Amino acid sequence: MEIVIAGSKHIQFAQTISKTIEESAKDRGTGIARRTPEYIAQKMQNGNAVIAYENDQFAGFCYIEIWGHGKYVAHSGLIVSPQFRGRGLAKEIKKRVFELSLKKFPGAKIFGITTGQAVMKINYDLGYKPVHFSELTDDPEFWKGCQTCKNFDVLTRTERKLCLCTGMLFDPTEKKQKQSKTSAFLSGLFKKNTK
Image (cartoon, rainbow, N blue to C red; front, top):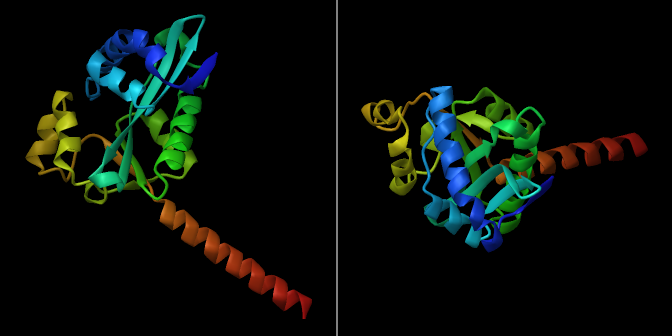
């Protein structure tokens, strides 16, 4: 199984990825925003996507979107082809796209919205926490992407305050502050015990 940063040579999979996302939304009966093959191809060309494939067969995919002039990064379109499900592939793809985000956009808050319990667990394990939608980007272009979701009416009726999705956020500054406090505590403890 190859899990790599997608590039131009992977555009051949864009149509299949788009179709897989659409079929998954129908099968699960949950809200997944559809993405065109052209949009997916653009993410690949920009080096803002991770793809998994085996023997020239598409296995999984996820991409990065940049919002609020680089203050926010979202992971979207996480999908695993049905025949590759149940192997932990979604977790591996999400981990790779998370690492790619940290490398390309250091300091940006990373977020996602999902109705899937498995994705929520993956996000939680990576350090995300559930947050109110007001803590996510206020960039109207991001929220336009939800228009193809069957639950979009819920989002608009509540003025983007509520939806069936859960918003999750990873704030790298919080992690640094926590690490700094832990280091200070351990340093103080060490000094105290060496006196």
